[in-house]
Picture (cartoon, helix red, strand yellow):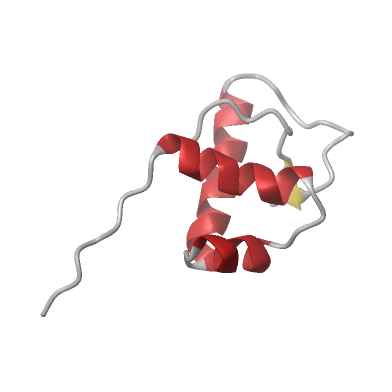
Length: 81
C-alpha cells in the first residue's frame, strides 16, 4: 500500500519557519511538534532566506538565527512551496 504525499499550505510552512526564527526553539523540536522531517523544515528556512535576499531585505542584525551565508529576516512574508 502506498502512502499519499502530504501537502502543506503556505501558512503552515510560514508558521513553522517563524517558530524557529522568532524563538529559541530548534529546527528539530519544531519539526517534531508539526510531525515533519527536520530536513524539510531546514529547506523551508533556506527558501525563506533566498526569498528575503531576492526581495532585497538583506541580513538583519536583529535576527536570532543564522543560516548559511547570512541571517534570515524575522518578517518572512512568502515561502516558496
